[in-house]
Image (cartoon, rainbow, N blue to C red; front, side, top):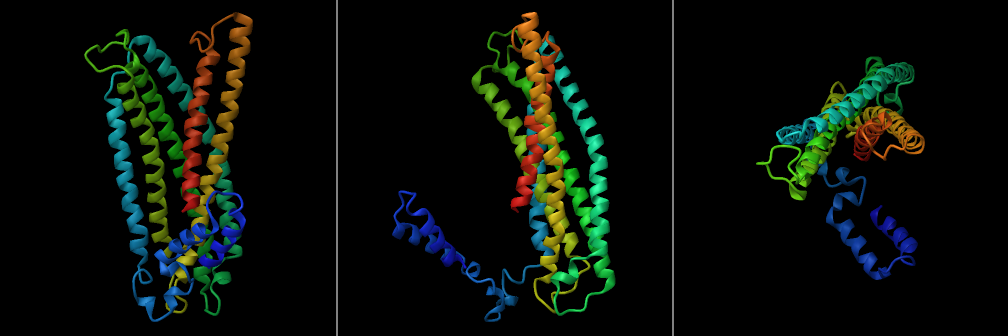
Length: 337
């Protein structure tokens, strides 16, 4: 329980920190007493608390609250994206370079997602076959008769969760890449204090550029959180439906739903792995190529737009550090929940 964990942490960390053992013990004790229900896994089964909050909370509330929060996050992301797109994009040269980077990033992700589609479908079918042949419901529900129809749905549930988790992870990466390429040129235009980028009547400088960059980054953050809460809330509610074991063993339906949702996180991880690694390899190859050919062989300055490899390097930054990071953050957020 929490107190035993506190003693273990105290014995392990007290020689390594500046926090005294007694102070650490008081902090851990105060943490454990803030929520009495967390001290005992059988909290809901004592003194008739099974019919009291939070033990009696319904699946609709558990799934509905994060679902609505996800929609609010996505709405905030849309508002911020419109705010970013309302700013001017600068002069013709800035627009030309920005369009080249955006076009290259979209082409890269379309190709990557095209091949990942086969992988995602293959793994989804594998989960469908495995959990249809060896359902996990009968392993988790002990002492209760389980219908064959209920067990046969385990594979379909895992199939759907994995597929949607992968799609939402890829979506988070795509939206992040799109807003990054849109915000980059607008941030550069706002940072130009010489007036050469046009729109002299619009505020320029560090503060103006920071607001655009911050709004662009916030779009990515709200999108990742919104899609994760939306997907988990919706599929938690869906996975609870069709199960009726709580009358025999309380919280069994919820445990089985969490078991199904593990495939959701698995799907998100699959996309995050490929998006992060593939984008990182591409951007590093383009970076090295730009330096070798541009600076060493041709004498072109670093990051000069006349060097095609420089454009490729910027494409890699967007697909690896933005799209890959978006899918990675989505996977981490889903996994932590």
